[in-house]
Image (cartoon, rainbow over all chains, first blue to last red; front, side, top):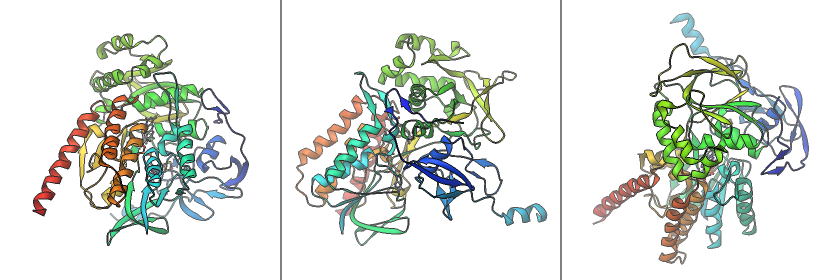
Length: 112
Length: 407
Ligand SMILES: Cc1cc2nc3c(=O)[nH]c(=O)nc-3n(C[C@H](O)[C@H](O)[C@H](O)COP(=O)(O)OP(=O)(O)OC[C@H]3O[C@@H](n4cnc5c(N)ncnc54)[C@H](O)[C@@H]3O)c2cc1C
Ligand code: FES
């Protein structure tokens, strides 16, 4: 489990903020209003945001600033949303999009 | 039609927006992040005088000034295309299109990855990702981390993690392979570090309570470099050990280190595993310039500036009418240089749009960029001045060609 940094020797205390409730893969989580989905999930100990569309291997954030798209999740039905950029909102439904079919690779395995 | 669209609300974009608005321009700022400030937000270090450069505070000041001026800043907007049509600029962001007479690209920098087996495991992140988690979101990236890549940014962020009470088990090199190049060569890494230490002595002094500059230099002799590293801020910096693999099944559980020769070759039989729950990869920064590439602006590769940069003049003009650049898109430097470039760009834009800008205020702004550079606390490349001179030569050549065509 990771933790929030409530007291910081230079940056001071973490401001009190509103708590929001959202779901990830059907489970309920709490986050601080305005923080990105990836931060809220990491604070709750969740690192794996998706499984690779082709290989099924677990993936989490990489750059945390919108450049790499490693953190893509489905938010309220919209695919390919970057969890590191998108603030959590009350009632938001986040899920991973899951493994996608890879017909060309599968065909090649059996035919080429 | 608006006078100016600025892409990026980092220190360069925000300073440009403020300066442009102060000169009466109608400005729109677009940024895909959910907060203004760009990479300034995560920055935190102690300056020579003992004051802290607090990026959140600096960003807040800029945003506050922008608010007073009534600037239109739209966050959460990703720009994916730009085009010049009938001498105006069209900017496509998500499902909207915006139009302006001039366009300033202030998209900043990105981090280069370092390829290591296991690097796709959850828990592996860029060193900047850990910085943002810690300082901006105030969530610990993990309990105990290993940083791969020894450079200015990774040393600075190692300290920041330490300040936030996050354990850094080691800073080590990546294993040599075809991709990792000089970043995995102990001798070259040490030379690069020594270059930096005279520019930011206090950074190194700060790193180890007892490690004064000369002591550090002495210990740095690479051949005699202690295998278990030199401790900076109680964090072992291992120039003679490289991470050859990141371990874990569903997420990071540790790394395998091996001793390497002075030119980075792994010595067989020296492998050891150390436990950690997160790994930071520090491959260095490069200018994030894709949007400029869409316009047909010429590019040059200048190592000292961090990679490919769009051709531009000292006053931040590109060869394309109405297109300007400022900040790390022009080369990797600190936030204060980005700010002075933003100010200069805004003055050039205002002048080109017919505002009354004295030549002296523009040349003074250009001078300020150089003096800010000279005084910079953190310098990412020791030869940045040489890089700037190279670029200026390309610009002069380009200018001469253009005049020939016009004659
Ligand atoms: C991960 C990282 C960590 C850094 N840490 C330090 C540090 O500790 N100390 C230091 O001195 N320097 C650091 N730097 C260097 C940093 O780039 C400069 O200090 C400074 O922030 C550059 O300012 P800028 O305005 O040019 O760009 P940035 O501050 O990077 O701002 C650029 C902005 O443009 C936005 N943007 C980019 N592309 C698009 C697009 N297509 N659509 C919409 N918006 C877009 C981004 O979201 C961002 O907010 C770091 C850089 C990075 C990448
Ligand atoms: S982690 Fe890279 S885009 Fe989100």
